Image (cartoon, rainbow, N blue to C red; front, side):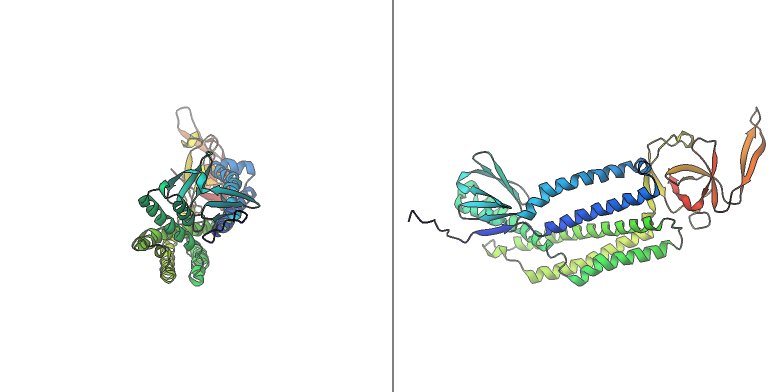
Length: 404
């Protein structure tokens, strides 16, 4: 018998990492494409140097994202896309592409639970192996280790964490059902955002002049995407904590009954939650349109603006609704505005109105107005930051009113 390989008492479990990590990779790459499109559009409007000066915080965040993306891929996504684990009665075999690593249970010094579904095995040589619910049925590793060395973890702690691993495994598995209900998902992720863009433009364009339509639709799209992601995440967490985890905890804890998923029940609950998500997202998107939230932007001042009593480098809120004179949100003389390539000035006169230089005598009395001109049609007279020059700019170049 010594010449024969020892037979395993159980068929080895083959555990793979979740398939939705490929979806995460696609999502991260999509964000990178959207950021590239945004900065490409701004480079088209301004020069690169001016775009960086106008939006330094956003540029910093974008650069951080681009630098973090390869790190995220190589240290988080790639190991989960290409790795797998086999569980035997006396060891683990970790497959990393063409390389395999044997983890003998007898060489484990201790087992430590970090939290949630994360735990690690510390070997006698000091090396650590981390596992969590990113790996399908990670509870098999926990059970296999306990059967081999029951003394490593107390029965109470073992059972409590085993239940937590099963809960997280079911939660992760439900993520793979994300687009199982095709009709509801099509409505949630395609029809609702498309309707938001169409209705938003129809409602807002009736009262507000939209000079840069491409930027306008880009902002609406980002709001739609953000709200859909937030509502989806919130409902997913609520279902896990308030329904599925409690249902699993309510079972008797008899193995393997507490690993069985009620797929029909879960399918009904998830489908109904997506309907509620649709209602919630529609309400939030309606509030965006109702409150004109997409017409507010943030910018940082540059240059010497002491004449306007605005500190250099201050972050200001720009109300982009105020960019006209014959609409609901009208600009008035004296308003601080942003125009062109992020330049700040003060409204002095509208089209057709006279404008000129005013001189005073030695005691401060007004003598006369010199170089009187009329503001050309389609333009507005603006005082620059030095407090002396007056320039005519096109009304379509107005970005919005500075909110102090």
